[in-house]
Length: 257
Image (tube, rainbow, N blue to C red; front, side, top):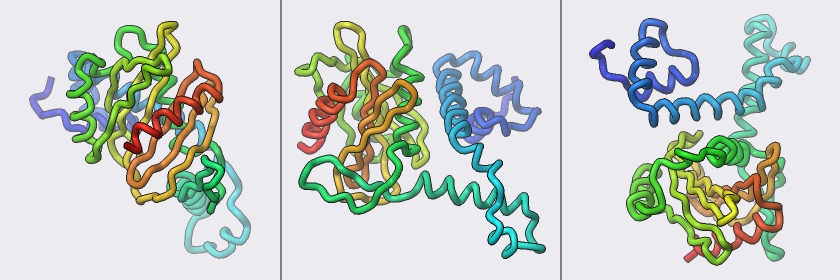
């Protein structure tokens, strides 16, 4: 294997299929010797595939006639199609989120229930909750280390809520990639093996409105909300909407303290 150090940028390029052929063998050998890193990169690929599946169809949509007329003849129509698709994707990713959770809250902006935030949380849950041997990077026995590590990586203070009163014990957590930077994922499990994950990310813009929204991605239910500079998403394929809402309220109350 080459003596050239493996960089995070190269790992990301490998996950995206953009790595130059000359470095592929070195990266694969490096990953083969590091199962945890190999799993992390595999998770990146799974997340990327989910996003592509959701938005690739936009590229195939016809260019609106008025945009094609305005751009012709200086810019090729194919480029216009790509620009339009990226504009739509940017709106889906970056649009301010309108929240509706408590009766006294007023919804100021309406957005589709299924945002990229909820989708990523659902994909992360679906990826790691079935794992038996390696569901988390750091176990509950090292909870203090886990919280300190994730807080440092996200740049904000994060907590692992106590859900014992609801029959859910902390399994542990891990670090994931996100569109705004690193993401924390906490996993919980009850005595019958039903699992719940809390997906925590920092927000590019500060949101003063705290509220819940619900989304369902395949068989994964997600309650998600934004509180100032942090976004939270509680996901489970094992719990129904009412059970998930009860746990979301429990998590919210603890995070407010």
